[in-house]
Image: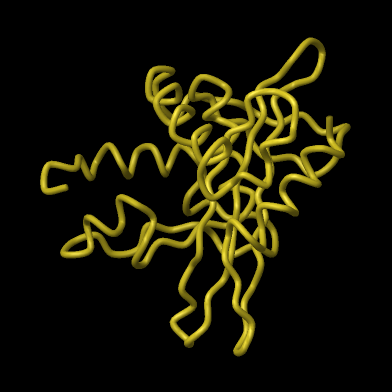
Length: 178
């Protein structure tokens, strides 16, 4: 991780919408990068990502690296731009597909098509965890690519894990959308 190109990481996250924020949503940030470099590279440490930005990044994996600005209504049209190369998207898709077929996101395995997903557990710093899942499905025919992010806020005494808590909700949401 010492050779991680921090300028490239920042350019990708900036292009994906980190720091921009949406109305009523705390903006996504990378936070401090220094001695936390290895943790930042895998989304740990002082990284904060809002669900819409996370869904947009998942969508970019199935759209050859092109991120679409999230929209909240079916009659809206979002802008689109490349955040990473198609070859990077293909590599990410392989790993995220494995999460669905044999990893922590198997709750999405019954959805038809090549669903990709990433699950996670985010530390709150308050002694409990939050659970999340991002998932995407490539477009088919007239249906555009679909992406979803599920973020569940933890609380004391509630054990949340991305694959067990958030992934089933992501599966239900994607199934309803297709």
